[in-house]
Length: 132
Image (tube, rainbow, N blue to C red; front, side):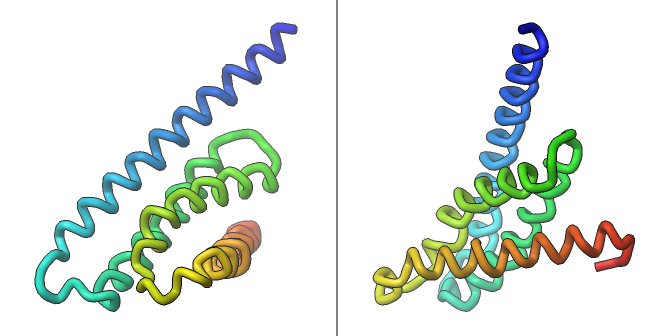
């Protein structure tokens, strides 16, 4: 069916664009970290870079999926999938060694509870046409 092929091509193009965006965000993260190198490169200063960077990544990913005609649940799933990968690059390496036993629990708490709720909040505010 030609329609199925078009949808598959559209989905493939969307996935390729998403991959490009994720890779670009990872490169941006490397640049952000280089700018803050020095003797004061402790956990607090790294988290002070990671949190705003991760929030901007959420914003960029939400803007990216907004341009596609798909259900909101599917859009959120794409954003969460991308954030899962970015979390492993941006946030996870910041934790000290003694947190390793709780690493997966922390990831679940941060992504599946906090970030997911944050996205729901942003979407509801946008639907109500209220500033965030």
